[in-house]
Length: 172
Image (tube, rainbow, N blue to C red; front, side):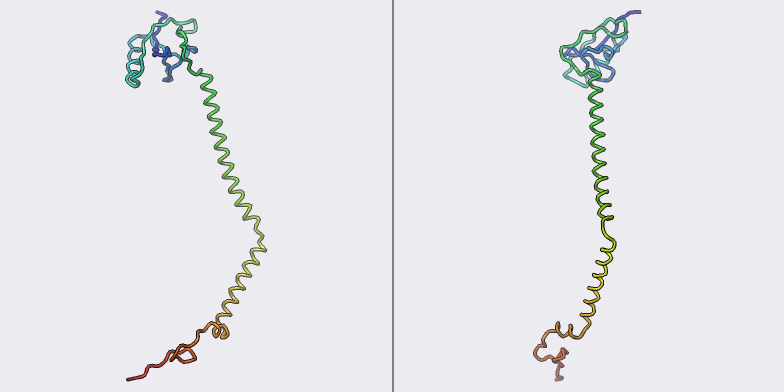
């Protein structure tokens, strides 16, 4: 059995991974290895079809004692796996903090509304309702009294009866 494997390298000397991204080779365990050259070449053709700017090549590499390809690191560094994991964890923490802040804001709004309802004095509400009812009753009494009607009546027009009845028409 041969200890050689095939890897795909781009124009920036970065290597293709199973995760579908390019790495600089500092973490050789992430580099995608192929046992056969034609498999690596097929993968390179598929990558080139998706990215017309890609200038890639298939390289033959020896395996280390750990079973990782022995590759030279690129001069164009990419984020390490630990850096990517830390960035994702920070992003998730920020999203959770934003969700909690939104929940707290909605809870504060509902709590404030509940406090406003509970702060209202039932006796004050009852006396306000009584006052409104009494004012409505006084208005109804005033409208039905003759003095109120006389005060609001208009002056009779010419030819009209002083009692406010319309004039009679004469028969011809």
